[in-house]
Amino acid sequence: MHLLLRTLFHILVLSGRRPKVDFWGPSSVSLRVLPTDLDLAMHVNNGMYFSLMDLGRLGHLARSGLWAKMRTRGWKPVAGAETIAFRRSLKLWQHYMLETKIVGVDEKAIYFEHRMVSDGGIYARAYVATRLVGRNGPVSNAEIFAEVGQPPADLVLPDWIHQWREANALPGARRPAPHAWH
Image (cartoon, rainbow, N blue to C red; front, side, top):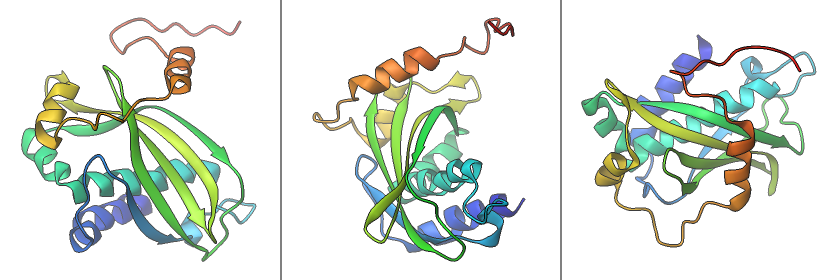
């Protein structure tokens, strides 16, 4: 519950006070490690990183103006795949910047990169494949681009992300996905 309230506060209050951003450009938010972010090792819990990165992604949507359009159309953001690498641990009360930018698109998803940066260095970096879902299912990229503009010509999704998505894909929600260890 604490993160839900923190997320709503960031989107509804703080994002409106921060400068607007271009949807296709970078954004950042200044954060501090709170006691609720920690695990028993007294550093940010590995699962908490993705939740904190939601603050950057949803804040990016709000500051670019897409959040208001999403709410009008009944669109909701979802993550389809995520990968993360850790370099150093963020500790209690440590200040850091959460940097967010779109690194590419494919026929189904828009891909974000998030970086936790402190003292001039990257502490963690993640890539998230995202979609918007409406009342009738997934929203096409064409519909999204109609709201935010076309991606810049030089925005090319790295090959390794295509390979990562293919190697980690699960069947679609309407197809069977039986469980069996091999």
